[in-house]
Image (cartoon, rainbow, N blue to C red; front, side, top):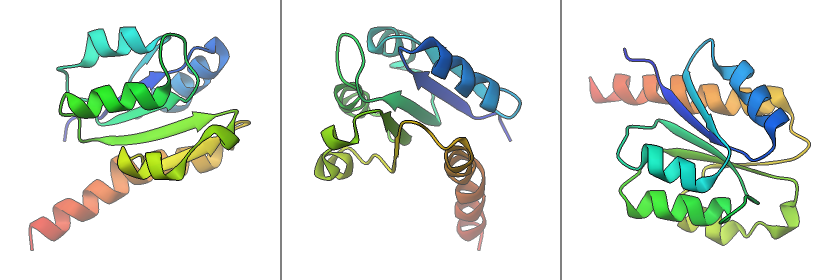
Length: 131
């Protein structure tokens, strides 16, 4: 089984570093500061999970995910924000964003969601497909 790739798009350096430390022992983690860098580097690469902040320079995390979806990305997304009142659940559903976490983050809950998305759920899907 190949190592899963996680793309983190977060303009706050401390949060970017925390995510990297949390995940780098189990996954290939690429953390970028801006949506533009994310799009330039990964538009055609295989990504298993995108974790993005809602409020970013240049464009919102929702706009970023919309662009990834338009380019064919069908993988999972976790959206985070310090402004939960700005999040419209209809848009989350339209963009197939499976998880939303408000800041300050509960790292255990976030880690559980990441493990579910990248490990447990994929294992179950492969097992069902082999039946």
